[in-house]
Image 1 (cartoon, rainbow, N blue to C red):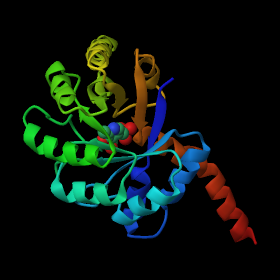
Image 2 (cartoon, helix red, strand yellow; image 1 turned 90 degrees about the vertical axis):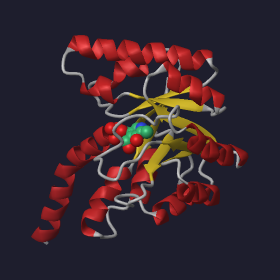
Image 3 (tube, rainbow, N blue to C red; image 1 turned 180 degrees about the horizontal axis):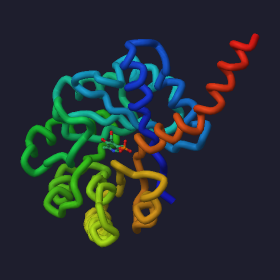
Image 4 (cartoon, rainbow, N blue to C red; image 1 turned 30 degrees about the vertical axis):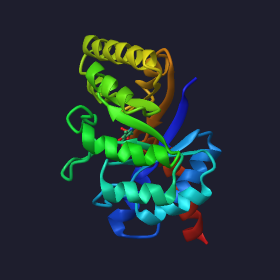
Length: 238
Ligand code: PXP
């Protein structure tokens, strides 16, 4: 069974909408752990739109399962990772204008920049995963960098409009997964996974980690709504 990494970025997104102190992603990480999360994933973006440096530093102290820091392969981020020393870093592409991470990291095109970052992380004993598209060229480049894992981008599978298209994407991910396993890489997957579409991905041979955020946070809001309203009503009623 793959490990579940719960991405808590969206909790910070709600907090930042008000520049308030709640909801605190640090609390969310603890509750996710109580619910059985095998890892906590957070993306410290260059624009700090959701997760803040303080969140990362506190979670390094409080999270008892694997702490997986998603970040761009940039010098400033590498410096932070080397200070905080999360258990794992997942390198992702980052564009300022994107709503979320839109495609995999192009390791082939950015090989030297990624290599500089990977080397420093590996020297600090941080496990390194590269978030890439299900593409053999990218997997071979990841293997050359001697990283521990690749996280295959499941966004196209998640966005597929028809069952045929979804099956095609699933097969492409499964075949790329075999190539990664053949190279001795650990196989992670993530992006766009939901309660409806996760099972076929979780069943792919050799997948060891799934990183899921949006769908879990969306459900948390919904399953918590009724209780939250009831508690406010009780207070008002005195
Ligand atoms: N994996 C990576 C590398 C990501 O960048 C993201 C989104 O931050 C996720 C997994 C989680 O995606 P989602 O929020 O769609 O579940």
